Image (cartoon, rainbow, N blue to C red; front, side, top):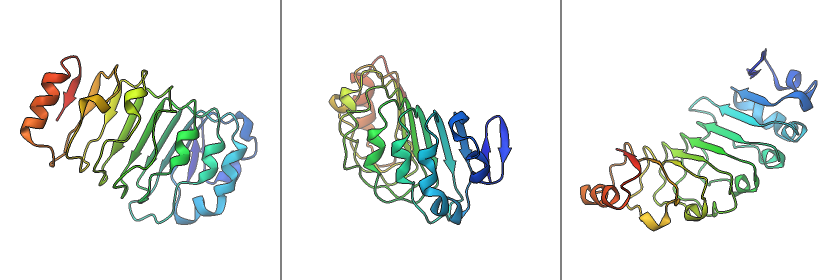
Length: 193
């Protein structure tokens, strides 16, 4: 089922009747929806918010055509079991909010430093083992979450300079002294454990 925030849709083709008017799109696709319609995303030229939430047994990927949505400010992707973080996401220059949750990502091989408008980054509920590169260059990034990941070390120098909230809930690989070190070196950051 596909729906726009202002009106319910049962398939993507209804949203494509007038794609230039669509600013917010929330997708709850089954296995065939994203595959069959992956090229359709480029039609949503004015889309600002995109939320894709799949069933945990979903076996597709995030459509790369999303990278053509130059006005996208908010992207939320839940339960797509990708193993490799799609680096084309860093092409979304206006992105302010990014949440990628419930996947199989272990590492991120691209730098986030180009996403200069990013205010919130949530990479959660995955096997991520290292803090991504380039976060220290993101001056607008104030909320960062690595909840329920496998990160074992967080170097305070790799974090955004204006960080207000750091969510490390459910990380079992960080040792107690690591939490104490973060708390000591980031006195103005709300650290959630």
